[in-house]
Length: 540
Image (cartoon, rainbow, N blue to C red; front, side):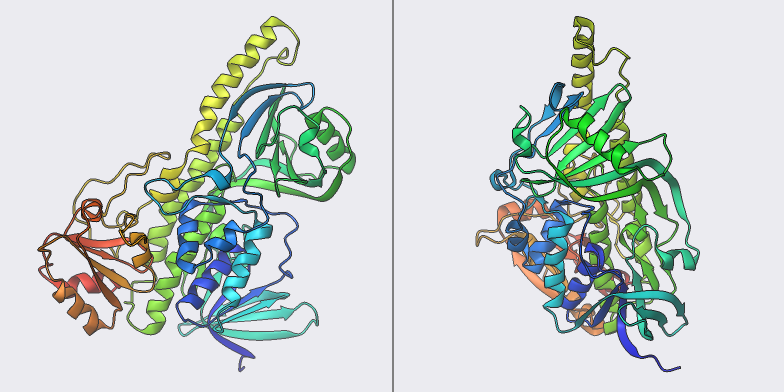
């Protein structure tokens, strides 16, 4: 049967990962279609941190200012405050102070800072970005019922929810960005490996004007509450002014839904007094520690939460998914344009799955540290012994929680070890310390950021093509690589730079960088077989 619609790439799900993939494909001039069963409204923002690597992609897409200008107040202190008992009548036993976004400065390793932009603010930015390209077709209220694939393509049966009409959409490739409960992943029989239920949590979005004036602790991003049962709840600023997310952690009570009376009682327990507020939404959810056994099946790919479900502790989830999107986008582009080799798309799982495993593991470790306090029955007493216990638990907790707040190595330090499309040079692997990121041009790593004399970042060189960087006076010409790339139809630009800081950071005289900004080959001399290098990095 002839399909009703056709598209080169069909993306299922218009959350941040699906929108990032559509936007990046559009930015590359590629046609794609996105189908989303909802109308795009976000009632429960599931992320609020746009990590520093994601912000580097936003820089590439020229939407940094949109993120900066989002409604989240840039003067809100990003403090984390740890409470024994309620906000009013309890004790502040620890804290980690962080500057507001408006006062933050980029680290030496990046031109960007991480930003606070919750999903209800970030999704519209990505939607606007993706919609700015005529090659991107966004369709909301479209539900995928089933998919079938052959050697030549994929056909999706889709229901138009507003009319009930059913249509068929044919694509060369399909990318499932439809969340942790992905029906497409399940239909493909792709197993999720790990722990399916770390905790059962209820998120409550409530509105309360002047909430910060109720208590003596001042403005902050996040409050963590420790009671006799241990860590049991958090309150996080959604818009920094009058909307807050209250998360009730229920490790041992199963996945039943809480009643409104229970929610009200929990809010009062956390705050310590009755006050005026409005509950906007209540959403039960399960923290998971899962990674897909594979991220590709034939012509179908899975990305984002469909491929890895993790605790939000650390802010890795959405940012890992955007990394999936950028990795997959250039590989799909290369394949559809004809210069990608027959093994290029298989490298998606090889490269991204280990990153997901690392991030999922770190997120669960952060959760374990957050849930680590084990108070005595006298923890909330007004006695010298209880005061001493609170001081000890507070100091230990503050020290343990440092790891969740200091994550530059997690966001920038991942690398594609053993990648089938990177030419290893035998040098030792860099550290995987979650807090530390040491820039390197070692193949598989993100290319280093250095500020250029003209005010740009070296990262601004990369994006739409391979780039061969020639470093220093007397560097080899690179002509053989340029010629080999031309013969294979691989887009490659040549950049020469003699600035000392760049020469030092890039470590070799010739460095070949992929469209996603990761180094795939380097050397002080021209390769003995330039064609072999080009064939490997294009997946042939």
